[in-house]
Image 1 (tube, helix red, strand yellow):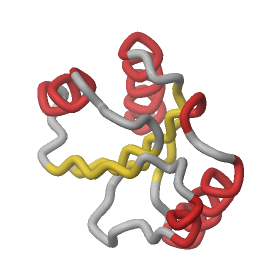
Image 2: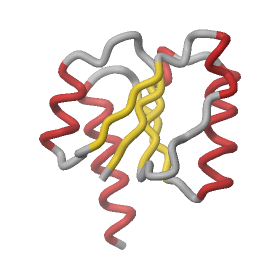
Image 3: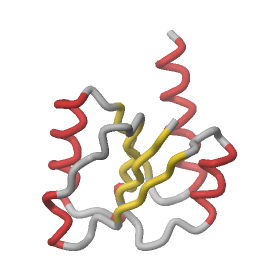
Image 4: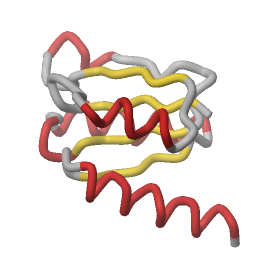
Length: 97
């Protein structure tokens, strides 16, 4: 599976934790630069993870629209592994039903 993480200047341990959860391809955009407001989600992305406390509103709006257009799953979490893991668990429970 592949994930695009939007938000946060550095991922730190988040990248390692995502790899342990089965994500082979991990892309990252800080989402804070004005030049990134016209970003495009890579086609092979399974999930977009938006770190809500480190992204500007315009980027979040752009990402949300693109995920709807491409039927890509989107998750929102704070930049804390506890919150990210909780979002991933909810996603896994929803996709199993």
